[in-house]
Length: 592
Image (cartoon, rainbow, N blue to C red; front, side, top):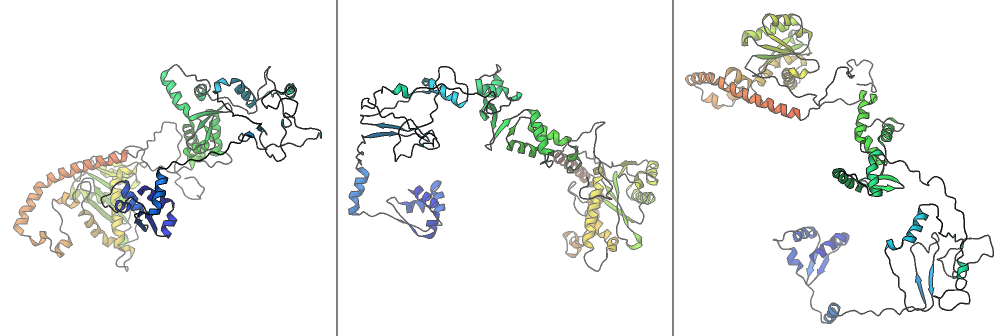
């Protein structure tokens, strides 16, 4: 009963929203719906019925209704059958009595005791089945089968009957055949003496066309086993192939002698040869109505229009890959082409990365560029403002690094002429410093310093906003404060700050002094000296831990990078498209 109320509220929602509803029932629905411990379907129905104002009442006993309820529950209702109509019996066929049908009407007249119809299996009605197949397939009529064309009704229609349509005839004396007249017996089941003349068959010549009505195409080679199974039930001798064909054949059907595949979108797809399918894809891709769509779009469009072959997606991918127009205007691939190869980290100040940031607005002293050096281990950043970015300036900067931190093992820089050639390259060769030049096609090998460049710029730009009176040329004054902030910020790969890995202790920030940091308030000269000596002794252990953390961090980077790799391998002699470097004269329709 609770379910009935729920379904009624769901179907008649507009009535329940507009009126107050009373539910009168003998069952305690109110207690069931308001039970706090209800669960399952009852709880769900109660939640659904909560927005409506339902009033549950129990039906009281009404003396005048008790007898009626008893009769309805227990009395057997007996209906008197209608009197049989013994005068006529009529038989109707679906569509046969319409004017657009064959116009057949069977009328059984007279008095009869009853009528029996027997249904026999189709296999025992081979004669009628064979005749119907001959007519539906429009084949030649074999010998021994009579053919009669009925050009006028074979019975007399009544004046008020609308079931028989009599076509207009040019012959005025044409009358329907009278099968009810004659001097035979009044019994409608007896044979009439002139019935043989009425059913006389006139021999006719039927013209059979040489070609079938529907033009059939040959079955594709890949679909021959499926066609043979559906048509003749034949399967290959191999058991695995036979099972595959049986399972695949469930999605196919034969229409007018051609094989069709039933898709999940209820589209019948005609099975075609791969060569014909290739022409269909080419027309959709670059024909009159094509717009050089992607491979998946081509296949979806071909299937949607009713064509199918199993190698459609592979052929579409090959077509798009070999299309010259698509390749020239294709989107750039941002996924990496190879696995990430990290540079191993050894010890502080062994490997430095060098780069130049340019150009800035002219500052004090005509400074317009910045040379940036980053240590691979400690992430210690050194910068030097310069006026001219040449090899001599880079050599002077590297000498300052050597005098403070010692000779490095190698220096990684880009392929600029001021670093790869000239005085800087000769200085590195004289001092036995290996100069590693990053490839133009792979600038990520110098990514450490590129990241440092971004942090330097990101730190300088906001500091030039406050106060607003400061000009862009004041970036030189903000450079030391920005570097101090970067050096005292913990690094994700090592877990320490660059200042700690270099000096063995954390730096004291201005906020520590202003807000009384415990390090400042508990400062004593004697204890600080002893703690400093201990920190220097433990520095090597901290650097070993930072080295392990860096190795783990690089391993995570390689694992993340490998999930996005889209390998592209080129062989000698392959044709490749180079990126257009010159932008002069280019427009919206120019290739990239």
